[in-house]
Length: 151
Image (cartoon, rainbow, N blue to C red; front, side):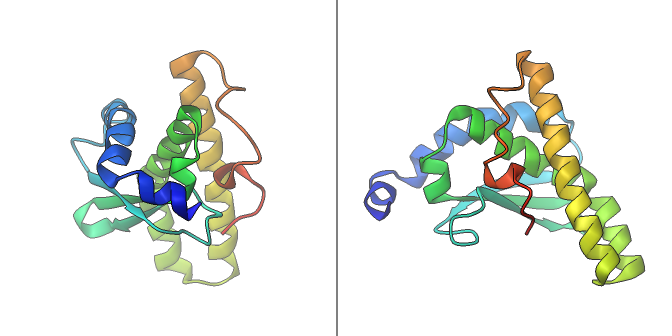
């Protein structure tokens, strides 16, 4: 995997991500309210997660970080599913912040995080279905962001 990672440059990765990222940030109305960017990292959870989002709620800024190895080995459908899933996290983040503010980081917050993952998966699948008219080619329960194992 390291050999593959060395042959693909981040500029090439960005070209691959940009058109899907642009489509969905505009389609979801995020470009007018949030400042959303993306970047690439060597590993997220030892290559078990395709992407993760880092948010700064008061300033409505978010960065989606892609695991280079996962991204380089993904299909276009998997890439789109990852982008939409992470954008769902951004859209639902005010709700998550409210839960954390009210209940801290206890069991309720952990249960909420698990429920949020399920919601992001389901919403992403449905939105992609609406765009392409088919869901099965875009939803794979074996993908890290669709699995039953939560972070």
